[in-house]
Image 1 (cartoon, rainbow, N blue to C red):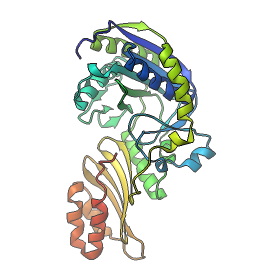
Image 2: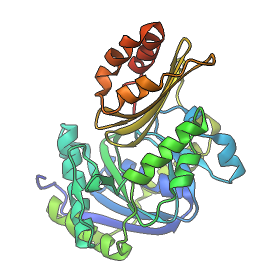
Image 3: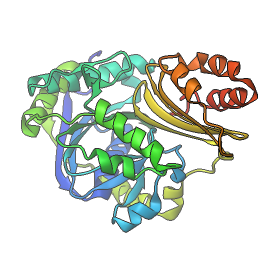
Image 4: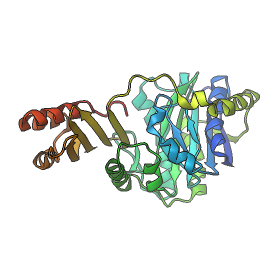
Length: 341
């Protein structure tokens, strides 16, 4: 990264906070950095579990009845991504920089802002790397969930040290069409999302050093500014309002449901006329598929076997060879490409 006009990197460790504050604090910092506060690295650990949803995503992706029954608050953040389950086994870090000091290239900006986190993982004994999908991973397993976005004139990248991960609850908070899809999402979560046995304090110290070195800044302990404290009060109110949680007006619902497990790994369910499809996709190829119909006797086991390992873009071609019903399945596949994830 180029050297920034500020001479210091403000470091704020909020410790353990409420679920609400674990979101609103870093949003307030973004407003502060936008207003002229120095680049800021912050840390926070939620005291209780909750669910967080990306700004543009539908609240219908969350099983609100389950969350209510379990006492899980649901909040909507200002950056993208689907619904995620968060709890006290995750230490969150956020780096906020003036937008003018961040590359306009999303790929380069993510690499610049996540590479110091990779260095911190490695300093804490985790053999992490930034893969081609800009995921922090150990081999093919994601070990850090991250989100990025611009809030006014600040760019923020958030990530987490996952000390323990409740795969079952992470799958359960999602609203899915059936338990078959939930089982497939859970299987892929267990396969591709891992906790890391790193010491959180070692990681935190290493992250401070790595970000300060990458930015060419002196790390200095800090606190919220007056602007940020005012923003925090407003954000606490906004993030708990029914209107904010419901989110922006939605386009008509597509007859598809897609769940991203990690970059390049996702599950979708789709329907076209009588055809119902549920499939898992790994590295742009179909790993598993389940084909069924709204009327009995329409299963296509042979076609399911034929799809295994086929590039997703070629799946409609394979299914087109199975007559009219095959063409219905092909249309269902064509409706889901993962681009909305």
